[in-house]
Length: 222
View 1: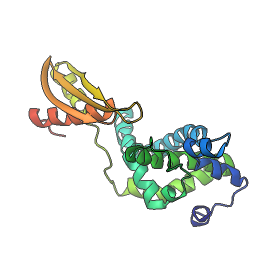
View 2: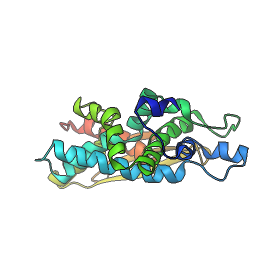
View 3: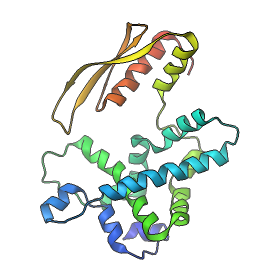
View 4: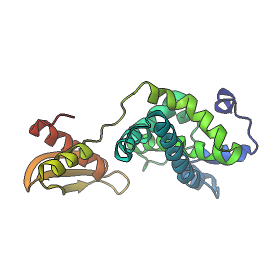
């Protein structure tokens, strides 16, 4: 597997990496009893821990809240999709492309998943230090460069609400689409007044868009 050679990974158990790139649609088609979801679960925890450690060492004076917001930028789905495509993990995914229920958005989501599942496999196979070395070559350079993948508009407007003693809330206006490919429309209310609508593939994404619109309308300095 070229990706292993690229990052100087000498596998003890090659099967783990095979599992890491196997989507459930491929498993169903080929009657396999595994997919990447358990490794993704593990990799998510490893990713958050190691990025948290790196950020804490990099910014010893930052508060917990500021570190949390900063970490979100480097572990969000947009960032994981970017890493996967930069590294070439997206080309390793075993996916049943004949399954017409898998949308383009879901394929992008899968490329984010496999970044975490691969990290989970690496952690199990080679340990925490090798996982850290891998992130030092794939994610930490973007942290050093202060690359922006995601801005947490919801946290910004919440801070505004707390400071100004105004109530910030969100309301679902509409949702439509198949269960695996839904679209949500949310609105943000500032002291009960409608300050903007957002559309997204999840409620959280739609809330972020709505919060951004409210920030612009209110003239809040980000």
